[in-house]
Image 1 (tube, rainbow, N blue to C red):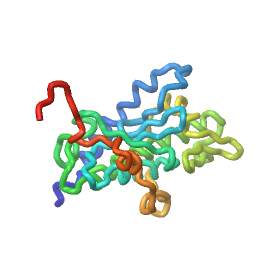
Image 2 (image 1 turned 180 degrees about the vertical axis):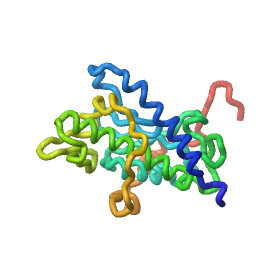
Image 3 (image 1 turned 120 degrees about the vertical axis):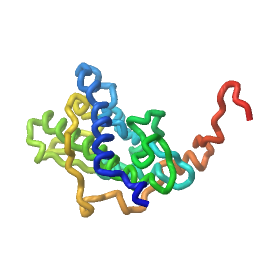
Length: 217
């Protein structure tokens, strides 16, 4: 069982790779307001306030999509109604299972494997959005609050999408501050499943639905 749990070394190695993805975004021109804010490999925020969580584990009926999205969204203080998910592309360095060393799902490892990754990804995004708001309003970061996808300080307010371009210019924190269990607002609550609609109407894609040119059955 212990083999399925990520070590601190593996988590830190993966986090280092993830945070590196933010560097190209920092070089964007300030006029590129339509560009999404992608502080790491697991989340991005678009100007229309949608928060897309990238899931590295395969959905086989065990429900990792909602579980992993909940972890990240809670640390980020995102509005759950604005959270969407997509599955990670093939990329072992960024999305490997920390127990297997390559991309893969199994052994009931999705949550235990990605717990700290998703928490750090959400906390990092939250810190950068808070810093973006502080810079815009000329206030200390300590005076900034975030709740349900809205960044505020006194009478000043801005949505995640409104601060996305500014946040994309900032450097991700090396050690983002994580919430204590008492501060969680989504984890442990009854939430609408992020993929219930697609599963209900048949639009959700599973391996058996994949069709490729020249594919032989």
